[in-house]
Image 1 (cartoon, helix red, strand yellow):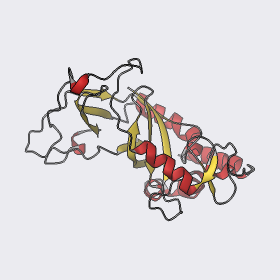
Image 2 (cartoon, one colour):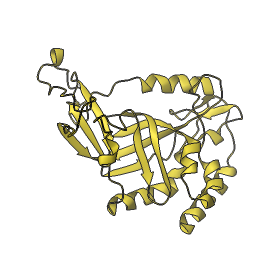
Image 3 (cartoon, rainbow, N blue to C red):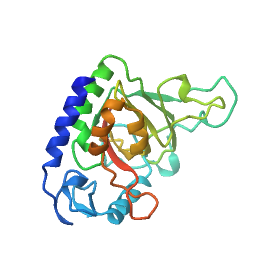
Length: 248
């Protein structure tokens, strides 16, 4: 824990020395931009409203595949040949049915630029990697139906039995649990997965993330996590954007 605190403190010192950029100029994190601007997911300084509009557009795109097939694959007409949704995540009584397909997550890496958690990447990614290697981060994507172009699917992110409710519905479907052993425990809201690259985008509740941390780390983390997305339209950022690369 002391090593993590030292690393976070060092990262903070580097960030504090950076110069700022006007709108339209490249950036890595919000602190690279002039006051009143944030760093968009495209790496360009812009207003909160512009970044939020861009993020909301991406968040509404349906994910329809998780395989590594050629991106030019054509969709089957009217779902022809698709594995049907069996309704395993619909309300029901125990014992709960299993999803047709389960993909185990074998790694998560926070992207090093372009989002509100970027400054944590250098410190947290090694801890996350160690957690997966030591078997401390159990996580799997459960698929009801088929994640293929033109097919219908229902998703659930599950770590264990506790992530299915008593009525068989999933605790996490449009959000992904995100835990770093001995560091944070929170979730990625509005989680959207790019099936070809394994890149997941979403939002982090900064207050919830910081509250889950050791008190000794909170002051430093407060300055490393950047609120850069306005979700309620009041022109004040209230969530930190998150970009993570997942391995299955």
